[in-house]
Picture (spheres, rainbow, N blue to C red):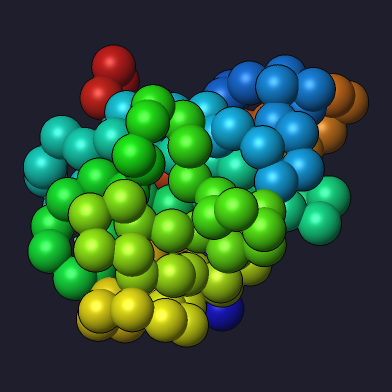
Length: 129
Ligand code: FES
């Protein structure tokens, strides 16, 4: 596993109810400090699994969503950057089309008893800590 998703579990932080994330549907945003910078992150559900990333395209440092919470392309199978159309694989964050330069920064998540959590890492902390 690459990126932040491969770090030790860290502290788990409640993100949303499981039912808030519909497969291929709207994402849920959350705010983090990553490498000391205040940024937004997002979680989506794809093929039943929750996936979360720093909301920062690898082409130009901009957020991906064209409308708040909209991260999937028309097929619901790929994440798309609204600015120039880079495409990313939801499970890995790997860029599979367009001008992206490498994978999105993955954030570890877990889901238990109808609740979704994201996990901190050494360079990834909540903004409200
Ligand atoms: S900023 Fe995302 S594709 Fe250019």
